[in-house]
Image 1: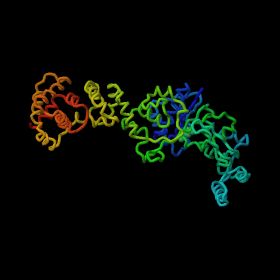
Image 2: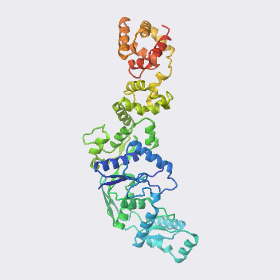
Image 3: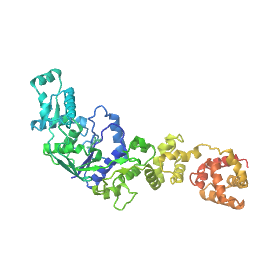
Image 4: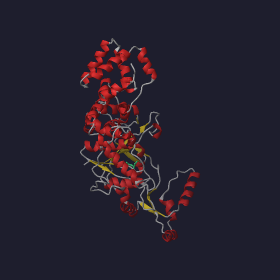
Length: 480
Ligand code: GLU
């Protein structure tokens, strides 16, 4: 049974890179009928916050990346929060001490610094070893620790040999002998070091595939050695390349929005974000750019994940979002739009139902015009505000000889019985014909007169949605 995990540290918002890692794990799990585990790696007590954990879970849920086991839903291999597993880490650390594969260290920080300084001075690699550190493990030092209530840290005895990783994405990665020395696995505070906790958790949670960012590739050396020490089976590793900004440096805030939360606020749909993120590194066999989640699950494979870094292209993401917006039914579009409409102050949530018919038509009218849902207020504002065209606009009405057409349009709109799309279309057409007006400039000017803008939804929708009173009012003040 395939078991994968996403293991974020709750130290901030979920970033697009993290979301992509979560997505690849999710897709792989679903494709393999496996289990997707969410584990919260909150052992960095200073930087981890509950608020950040809540926001991570909320964002994952919003994206639809549901997990089978995790801190909120539980599961057979819990707990799923590292801060609740401290006893397990202690037990596992001392299991290595018992086997002589790890040792307690009674060295003081300033002594370590001095050792390190000397090694650097002698142009040696600053690697600690049992031989060096055990010199400080004297009965006096132990007594001193006991007296002061200090606990020793636990060091892992790093075997001096070459380690080889056969990564599912990177291929063969060799870590030369002597790359690192002994390292701390368990702090005196009772908190484990990341590289140790991650191995204990992945092993005990029976994770079969570790799919994560390649910023963790170098950590894998320590992790391989730990698996070996426990004689526990290795999971498969798949290190996904980083996401870069357009300038080729690692994607960061400097490049604009990177938190998924920001994209939600801007009106990105979870489906389009997932689609775009999947394509940052993975490619569909037919190179389909628009690929719904179901299809991604069906076709996902680690073989099609590229080992090259992917460049984050915000414009492309925007385009993908536009494609997804166009695919929404008016009802779904409205559901997504309501927060933006109410936020803009156009109407309260309690008025949405009463105005549903109008709103659904408005959704149809603007659906093709936008790429982000936060453009909705701008598109709808001519209906909720009273935009007044500039005097130049009005002057060009005269200059272009459009006044007679506008005068006639006012009269016809004032008197037609029904206010249906078809009536509006035929009225406008008749006016253009009868007054022998250039249709293009007339339509353009009508749009400007009604909305004070050059662009926007189709004109006939604007007229229909504004309603007769507002249209007459806006035409009336032209004084033609
Ligand atoms: N907590 C680590 C991180 O957020 C996860 C590392 C891993 O997946 O092994 O980067």
